[in-house]
Length: 436
Image (tube, rainbow, N blue to C red; front, side):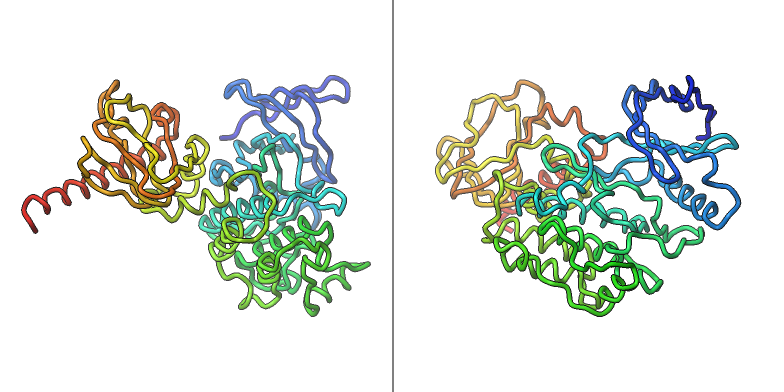
């Protein structure tokens, strides 16, 4: 919705842009400045990109800037994903043009793209996996970023990331003219250098370059000018990351090489292929330095469970935020008959037995839930059966109270999953009674 774009200044300092109170300037670019502001109505901090007054003046450069502004502005309220910077608002009139977006503290990945400040291997896998899932989400909405690089990926504590700056994006489901020649040369795919029609594979290539740089502190191709760089990208075979960092296992070399393959037919064809290979590394035998179970492994494990098959990526990331990941040993009591029921579980892998007074009621396998009556029943209910691990297992423990704070779509998908489980169990019980 358009609003008054007035800018209040005290001397050269800006104190207000539209309804937003300015806290401080965060940085300057060639054609815009970014401010930290406060939205008094939503009561949150926001980042405001204010385009300079002269940026849209009649000239080829001004027309390009105008198109890029419209690109980013058109995404307001659309790319809502936990790993994409959300655009809240966009304003343009004869005085000002600015975009209001989610504020993310912590800086960009640029500082980890140096050989003297590299991340652990497991951290790199985690970051690239989250980027791949987020860009897959954007692809399904018809958006190709076209300028993926460390400076456009924000990172918070705990390796949570947010992809930013969709101004250069190609919006495939609109009639707006795509601006050619957009991107940062070192990260541009061969087809992008040749101004060929682009698909999501150009972003796969760019993310592969980012992965190479985060692993080694250098780019796969380096040259003194853009022409020489483009020649290498179009003709030369890139080195392997392990040539510059000996602790990188062969599995990672294979993934990076496929992501930055100059032949698009050999490069990863889908984001799922790229993400699945990253997840295999995270959960496999590669000696990755990591703390506990990577979110990459957790997410991919849940993504493959029948219980969560109707959850979108956005809702599944939400589940990981409030669920508690637990490992249990064979024979361990998970739930005890008569105990208070304030949580339920989804079995990630392994097996469990549900018994009542030492009588086996049924067995549980991966992807099945148990203890759901704590959520479906009335408050204060106690467990009506024991649940015992029949093997070493992993499970996701979810407090009932957490579902009171989740998004409407996430809760709806839990309700649908529970309904499906109840129908399946009733059908099984009826078949046993009738002998069918």
